[in-house]
Amino acid sequence: MANERLFLLPRVNLFGQGVSKQVGNQLRELGSKKAMLVTDAGLHRMGLSEEIADIIRSAGVEVVIYPKAEPNPTDKNVHEGAELFKQENCDALVSLGGGSSHDATKGIGIVVSNGGQIQDYQTRDATKPSIPHIAVTTTAGTGSETTSLAVITDTARKIKMPIVDNQMTPTIAIIDPLLMLKKPRLLTIATGMDVLSHAIEAYVSTDAQPITDALAIHAIKLVRKYLPRAVANGDDIEAREQMAYAQHIAGVAFINGGLGLVHSISHAVGGVYNLQHGILNSVIMPHVVRYNTLARAERIAEIAELLGENTEGLSVSEAADRAVAALQRINRDFDIPRGFKEMGVKEEDIELLATNALNDPCTKQNPRKPTHEDLVQLISDAM
Image 1 (cartoon, one colour):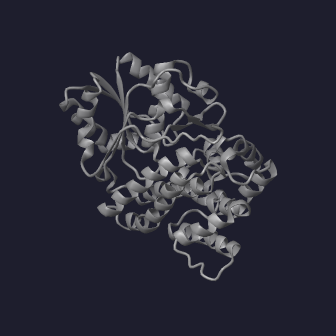
Image 2 (cartoon, helix red, strand yellow):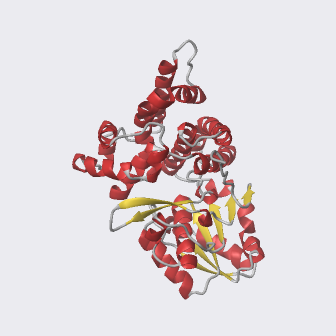
């Protein structure tokens, strides 16, 4: 059928306080004898990677740690990790962290099982299943533990490569809110705003559908209620747990419903400047929402209500304007930079950034089709 849709769901999810203690048993059930744990330097310094490694060892599975996943994971991370995996004769992967660790691990799994370079999978699908992969998430942000998307920076071209392949979906997702406690305020804001951007873009995307609509709407409601609490008190376990739900369902929403120019522009800027993805999303989001009002006014008006704006008696366009105002208010409340210039982005790079954003796969699902000049204007407005 021409209108047939494939709805992608996570394979297996373990959700709740303390479920990270099951990682070793889950590896053993997968038949693993030796796993490679991929994490970032910060979590490794904190000792969390060794805690998870000890849980794995206690289940009778050997483990080697690769603690070099960068905040914006690179092709070098993927290829170096794949070499270590093969040298150590590992048979399974565990990612520990947020989207950076999960995305790097997805890349490693595809390269190990299918060969070649990670760049190859921008233009072709993997033909073999990835290495078994357990994603243990420590942030409420990307939803990467449940999606078939990995965003990898090509260091030579200075672009972010969004790679979507069903073979990359983690075998098991472990979402333990206890691992999210005490996360720094800035990280909580950045990852939480990433959740909001996923839900908003999925709701207005050209590929939105009733199931993704329901998930996106609920995610927006959860972020509005619980992100301020998580920011105010990093030990608020209810807020952390509800934000964990929000990021997970927003991940399912966007991998099925699509994204848009918020992510296209964020990928373009992040690829050149290596800046925090969630903060980039926050800066550009009001500008993109205003731009998309021409194509999705009614839905953006609904987003205003979901964000707590009173739209009674307003026209659709006036209500949509309130959504932009709400996003600007949220940015102010969270002390997010007023523009890209504060983050070090240079005016002379705007043309390049616009070109890279226009070529980003997320642009195809944006409800309003941009020209290069439109993107130059959007990025200029966000400076």
